[in-house]
Length: 469
Image (cartoon, rainbow, N blue to C red; front, side, top):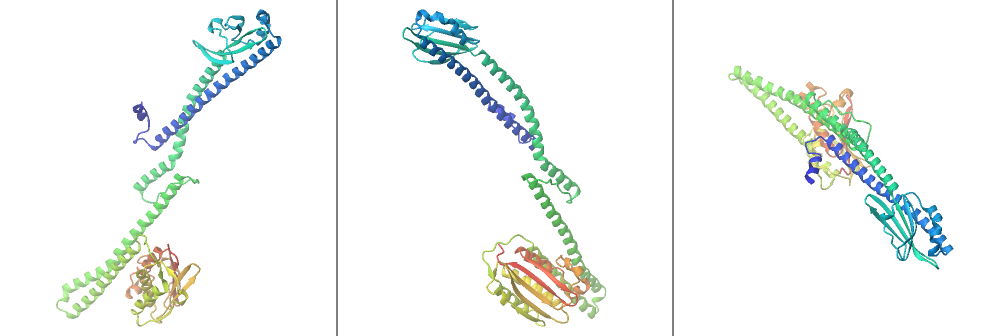
């Protein structure tokens, strides 16, 4: 039996749609069968109960009448017409004496020999069968001044059984129709259930064949599968963006690395031709090559920093005092720029704690201060201040340098982006500093933004929550 059930149940290699169809169909069929069985027995019992109540009513009326008449054994036969009024179709009524001898009998198509007469001392109700005929037998004692015996009423439940059989037949026919409708409904439901998955699968195939730009069409619903489709689209958006950034990063990195490599290669070729015998050419080529190697080293180091800044989430154990952390970091950074004038105000953030690694705070400040000094060729006045804003804290670095054109501001955080490539290259910029700073700030749920005007100066604001986690 169990082997047969296992062969019928869904197998692992079947599609989800067919599994859902079979399981839903089995569930609906099981519920329908159980409901019909319960309904059949309830209705059948109700019909028998109604027949029993009818017999009890007739029995009570006969008893009361005969008791009032105070009948004797000799008078029993005179009440045939009275008893006939109570006798219904497929029914028999008998009056017995104390020994069970039949004194009076009225019947309607119910053979007397089907039921043996039996005297009783108290009322009883019996369910009996005569082959395929279902009989309901009620016996009740009849005791008057002149007579002691039993009233016996027998009913053939043929009509009740026929009605039950018809009901069972209707239920069976309805069950077959319900099975078909269950399978059809389960198929439709399962198709609707797995439609987002099917669509997602088709989209994945298209993505595999045509690229990452395809997305799943999401209906205006709020179920789990629709949420899965939305999550898939968001994941694909992030994946496509990641691939685009990676592609752009490789292109930018190769471009940035190609220039110093080409310069070094050119000077090596120059040395091969004339540098061996010309000290001036030799010294110049070595100096330029050393500068380009330093530039290569700087680019590689900053690429490593950028990669670290874009790595996973940081788990912090305790907050740090922001004022002390910034002042300590600035003390190290200021030493690198002795030609600049610094105006530092950290008194407004005294006692404020944020969750950030001190070395990351120093990296951010080093990048911002280096840029402020680097792009302030005339007036190297740098202002660094801390400001408290509700539940956030701001660190601002302001310079009076050359500024950034408005059309370039949206791109300054892109990797390798330069406002003036030629000028910045002369100043040693790689275009990676602000990208690194932005990634570090975002790792702590912070924001970084720039306000700048050409020839007036630039203000870079780092906004950090006082409780980042």
